[in-house]
Length: 149
Image 1 (cartoon, helix red, strand yellow):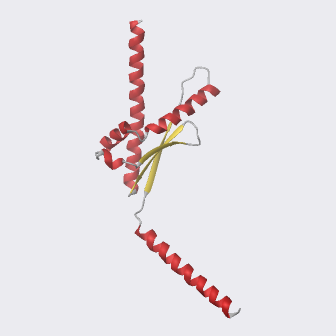
Image 2: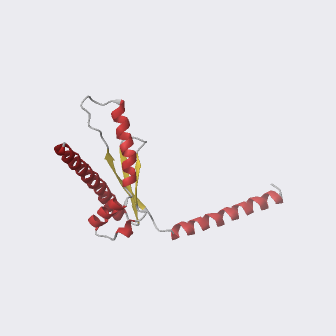
Image 3: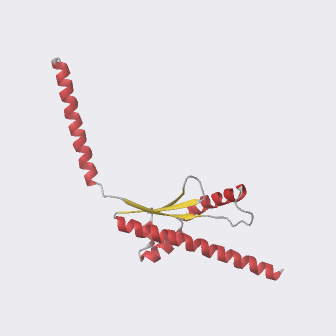
């Protein structure tokens, strides 16, 4: 190996070591972020078994419900269950569907595993309670209209 090859190799090694040290230093300064999640299965009642329209309807509902996870109403309920201010949950709870199917995944982040898990549990429960209350109110409204007719 010539002197230019040796110098290039040595320079490459030095640059690599400096870059690795920089990455190590920066990564050590970043706070850890933990995630926890829970899921909610969305089903559409059917008397004739599972059909394509029922599956499509459940998937469509799951897509709508995922947007509720980060809504103000759900965050208020989750914050109340956790006994924390609502603004402490800003950006820490999100929803998505699993493989575009009828499963809503609720994900929470925090600086510790325990807090992330508590947030996820509270958020899943809050979404469930919100949807249950919404369905109840809609049923009451429909029943009242039927009684008037």
